[in-house]
Amino acid sequence: MAAITAVMRTASIYLQRADAILKPHGLTFARFEVLALLGFSKRGSLPMSQASQLLQVHATSLTNSVDRLEATGLVRRIPHPTDGRTRLLELTTAGQQVLPAARDDLNEKLFARSNLSGTDATEIFEILARFRKASGDFL
Amino acid sequence: MAAITAVMRTASIYLQRADAILKPHGLTFARFEVLALLGFSKRGSLPMSQASQLLQVHATSLTNSVDRLEATGLVRRIPHPTDGRTRLLELTTAGQQVLPAARDDLNEKLFARSNLSGTDATEIFEILARFRKASGDFL
DNA sequence: TCCAAACCATAGGAAGTCCAAGTATATTGT
DNA sequence: ACAATATACTTGGACTTCCTATGGTTTGGA
Image (tube, rainbow over all chains, first blue to last red; front, side, top):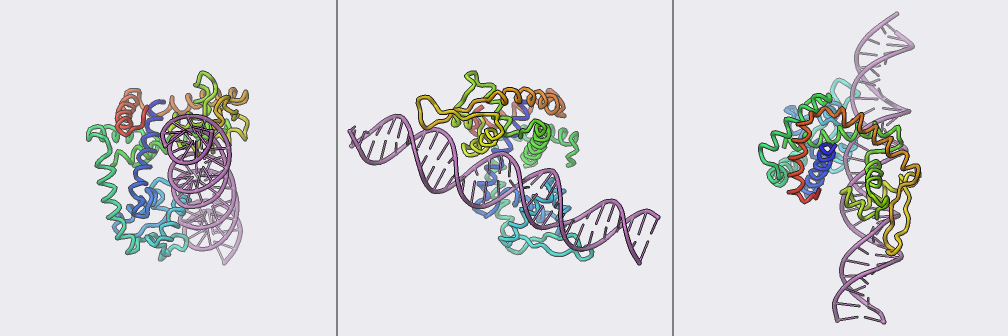
């Protein structure tokens, strides 16, 4: 019980910090995650459905984030060549510029100063990985 | 980095489960926390300001939760006897009935089946307690 | 004393999450 | 071939969180 509370508090602290760091880049953590995912994908484009699965977020939440990313010109929705239902997400050139800057900033200010020792971090990761696996949250 | 992501995912899984469990009781996790806090306080009433500090949540978020709790008749706002600025929160009799039922249900369905072994839970709690202390999140 | 600074709570607005429904497109079975 | 089913995404609504700003109350210093 105390452990669950601690996890929730910690998550909210990290989220607030991440949002504060990303604000000057015109991003929130949720939108950063979308950008980062697109940056990872080798083809450079992903269907909404796949992106929402990988981010472990509801399709509607992703629609929301993408609406805002599209409004600020960082990503683009393009039609799928063969399936009329799906849209592909793609970074714009603006998005390609913003992403590395935001990522570096986040790495430097959040991850490097996370107040977690290396062993603590691996410890936590392993325990929570077990938990998530047992909960069906595929990694 | 992976550790931070794991913490966030885990928190969101727990939050969803807690909300699902509390739904039949007409509660969300945020509102349950308010009720639980009032149940703990020995005098049975707390100023908004103090409650928001203890819950580590913004005053405006608490106002929101309390609005809904008051609308469903589980808590009451009463004036402070000597300080005209502050309002005291108090459980209604309905609130006093709902709280133990919700708490038992949550204990049984969430905490007991948390997919965390006892040692894992204490391990996590201790690591995160160190982190929160270092981050100024007083326990 | 009394005016300014501090404090308490609330209102309004932006963002995120989810769920339940709806629309459009594919796929499948008869 | 055509109706039934399934999939992909969006819309609308409920809820939480935060921030900024505002209206009342204390309280403390000139």
